[in-house]
Length: 474
Image (tube, rainbow, N blue to C red; front, side, top):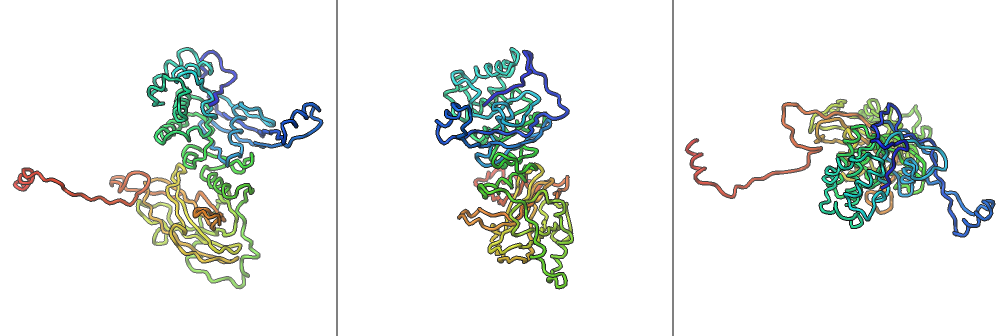
């Protein structure tokens, strides 16, 4: 784990950076590598003073720009090889950019490569003092924190053994424990927590949230959708070294999953409906049910264009949120029914259409998701110009709070994966809806959602004295 610090650090302990503005600034940063078919080609270029060009350029990162304010957490997601780790190294100064520049105002600690900041011959305890010296902290700084670091790491006697004897999990425990205790102003994490056990990962997530609340700025690379949506205030999607999306974490994750399905194909925005081809002549409109007309009239899709993507084969024309009595609602009680009517229109023939919905809590965590496939609903094939009205009735067995909805249309990907899908229209951020519960009434369950559960009781032994006494009292 590479440890970096501000070049203006002095012998005294660095003061906390009070930034009213930008903490991390990245402007048009790019990184090019020269790729040679033969190692001798590199020598040939050197010998000819680069007059002979025997390489091809590979841009690992290209024209990336962003800014981070104090306390923000930026998630960086993308397929393997998309440039995530390279971008972190450019931002932290571990690698030199070919173009552009990056600036960080404040003390930086970065967990980029597992164990890179540790001396393998030193014990965990010795490494704490050694790293404090490397980061130019004053004498006594590490001593004041050593007990807290040891307690957080929870590696027992290994804390006083050489780190070359550590497993990858213990290495992560030690390094993260050191870095969280050193209170960085900017923390950079690249998948380092993915090798820890679940209890330590949860512990680290809680600590990271505390640091963010205290004003730490963070760059976070992860393939975990839950970690990104839980910790990040925004996220970017990297594809072939370029930022293809910058927005809400749940939207970025949705596009990331779509990129996994597409492989190396470029992303497509949601295609608009082809009005001339798909819509019938206005003088001979198709018959429309009352529910379809009401759905179109009371649609909640207005203003969601920036939060949708997909192939565009089946477009979601309108969505309406009501209660079970078809009354428009955004506030519900725990256990109430939310009815979502979704009006679809096909721009081309789709033999096996699918549709579904998801519900997210206020932190962007997906609480629930299900669709026609999981429900076993038989959706008829669609031809270009066909319209379809779907009705979803969702029992809101969730804890009180604010939620948003996501809706999507898709078809099977055809790769044999039962979960694989080609997304035609994917929209996040519908709502918000609020789930309430009377304050003086006990909650019917604890946690995020109610799961099916039953309780039975069987008495195994009765105390006769207690039973007779109870009977006499009665």
